Length: 53
Image 1 (cartoon, rainbow, N blue to C red):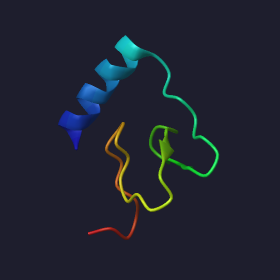
Image 2: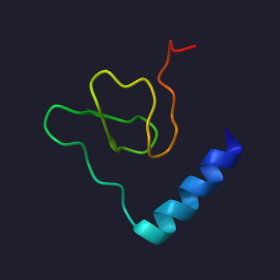
Image 3: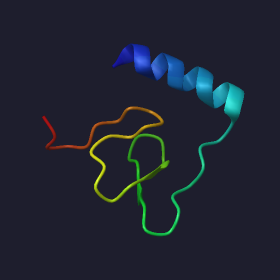
């Protein structure tokens, strides 16, 4: 949602670039952060994968 994206932009300004996925992780389509293979949303930017209700 817009509020989460607002805080994500602040996070990125303060912390810097989001770390790339480690071996065995998938990449978030929203921000590029690493996600566990079984994750349905990104803990960094809040992106929810397609098909998840």
